[in-house]
Image (spheres, rainbow, N blue to C red):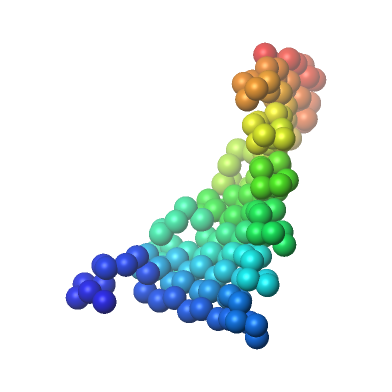
Length: 169
């Protein structure tokens, strides 16, 4: 303990164990207002739930984030609701990012100028393909080679352009 509370970055840590004495759950309340709960199964991390409970909600750029792990403790899924009302879902294969999906969850759809943004990654976690569906239903598909954009196609979803689809790159 320090006089000003700055000796460590957390206010409290609660740790619980299962009947076999293995770590079962740990809750940490950080000085900035973020609360983090970690669930363990057979002593292996199985999930994390984090929430920004700070007074002004600005301790992080997200409201809450949930992360799931497989039975070996390797990340499988992360879900995040950002302060901007964008929801992001990232799936992992063998701990490597596989697919990322972002959607505009704002009530009026004004958080972003798109409805959804999907990114696919190769077996090494390098971007392979992305697609965006904009608020006006137009969309853009981008293909990558070794992480660099290789081709791009725009599609006129609402028939407001003189072109239906065009290769941009």
